[in-house]
Length: 127
View 1: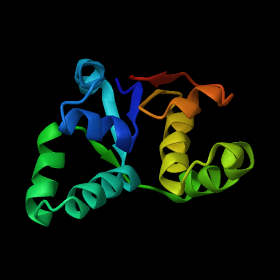
View 2: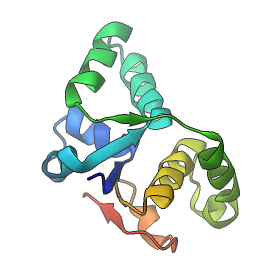
View 3: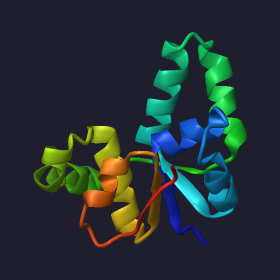
View 4: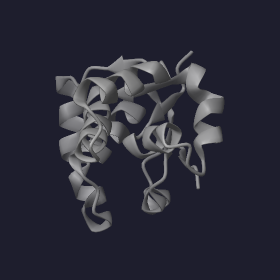
C-alpha cells in the first residue's frame, strides 16, 4: 500500500547518497512521487551537467512509481498557496503536498520549513 509521498528533495537526497537517504530507502517500497517532482529532479540533474538520458535513467532506477498531476491535484496545489505563501513553497512543493493530501500519506522532504505546516498530514523531515 502506498502511504508515503516523496518530495523532490527526498529523491535528490537518495540519488546523491546524502544525509537522510537511508530514511527514503527504507520507505521506498511504499512510496510514490508526483510527476511534477520527477520533473524537478530531472531539471536539477540536467542543470548540474548530467546528460538528460542518464539523468532520467537514474530517476527511473530508483523504482518509485510516478503519479500524474491531475486536475484535482492542480486545484488543491493552487489553493495551498494561501497557507504556504509565508513559507516560500513552490508549485512543485505544493504539488507534492496535494498528492499527499489526496492519499492521506506521509510526506518525506528535506525542507525543514514544511514542519511548520498544519495540513492534517504527517510531514517527515529526513535531516
